[in-house]
Image (cartoon, rainbow, N blue to C red; front, top):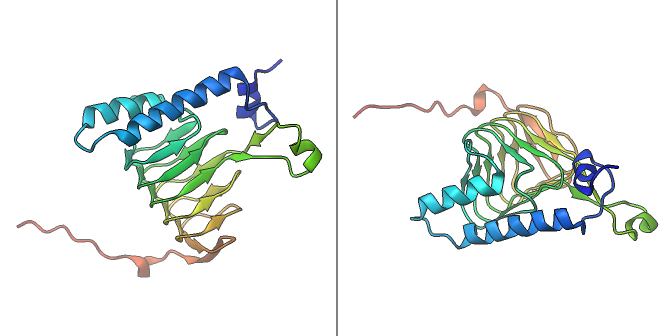
Length: 197
């Protein structure tokens, strides 16, 4: 029989009060607390905490505390990911984040969900659905990404949006519920120049 952790990661109903999962969440919360209490000049300490929280040695995010997550190890990070202040990632299912993804302040990524039927919900069991965010995505301040959502590469999610369904690549999407506003085109280029002085 599968463990509760195995059920959780497979997207099946699981018992969140399972001792293994409770211990993993406690470890992540203690690491988040230590990270959130650390100072900007404690670079080595923050690096060590991030490595332990995410269970990796490379591709560490640039993260502005405070930051909160359920497990940390279920967050798969690309290169140069940035989390601004007060982001929350409920990673009961895998959260896959591509390269150069920017999260503004107060962004929330929720993989955790509960049965819709009240009798099923009363069982206390829950489940999760993975979130996938492609490379070069920018998620605006206060946006919420719901369970099971995929955001295509290069897209922009407007501030305050609630993303309840998949968003294709290379679009601007806004609102509650979040909808595609328009494609991103060459007209959006700012023609960044690098000048030597």
